[in-house]
Length: 169
Ligand SMILES: [Zn+2]
Image (cartoon, rainbow, N blue to C red; front, side, top):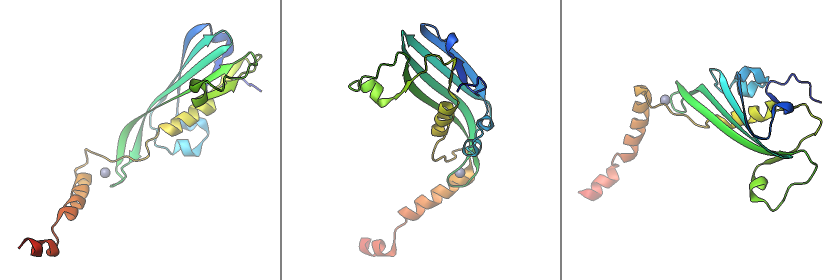
């Protein structure tokens, strides 16, 4: 049931034939997901939904653009990162099943839309796209302390062991 109170939704009446662009801004805390709230997003998140409507077929592309601070994997210092994600889905409203042979639609999400729905709720899709956009591993480059640490590790690897020295002599 569409309540019309979704965080990010597109009114189906606003989707016209051809391409439409919908812009949203939100914050990680808006999604009621502790995992997302703790992912390090700092500023406003920009979300863009582009719809491409062709009769009863609808292609929807979501892109997210955000900044965050994630602790460095080595020294735990906060590192500023930009996080961007994208996601695409296909919808249709005429009740026809999708073409299983079509490579393009098999790779992406395919959804059946209720013809009577007044809006498409994208909150969950945006939440998942944002979670996927968070980098798994971040290391800082500007922190001299962190570089020292990685440099030390390298030195250890390259140091010649007494056994090698003996062989050289
Ligand atoms: Zn570091």
